[in-house]
Image (cartoon, rainbow, N blue to C red):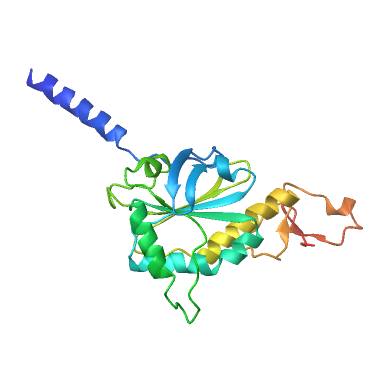
Length: 234
């Protein structure tokens, strides 16, 4: 009888742990849907952003040092993302009222000798963790109430194309996130690949094997070995 009770308890515990697990959407999947009142009005995601590249950021908490530095960096880069046709969304488990107060404070800060910036992108509340659960933003071994630093790059067809997770203690490299977005736009547009450490303007990799001997007139194509064929970016 004791053994049956132990087995029943173990099975119940396993089911309970399964139900509380954090599930992360996979690359290529449709971005999970949500509707929420943000600092810029009601957002229906991803429907409202269909046809655009979008980057969804999650952060642990308002009025914290690392998160504040990240929002200020994003604020200073808004024009860069606008020129790339990329929209920004930021979410945390704080309340909407806290977001308004935080934005008001952030917009007074002179950070890195820059003039104060206006935060033009929406901040989303997620007090009930519904959105965080859909995107795997709550990692229980880190915090059961605060989202980690997640990043989801979503393409115009509302598919997730890249995912980053950073620990709470480490600020994100916004330039790397922008570089990845540019790389994705480039490979989609030109049907190519980007090599390690690729930066916008660098040469690109062609997919598969290309016999350059058959294309002697294409001066933009070259090989370093038969399985690595490059093309100059024009």
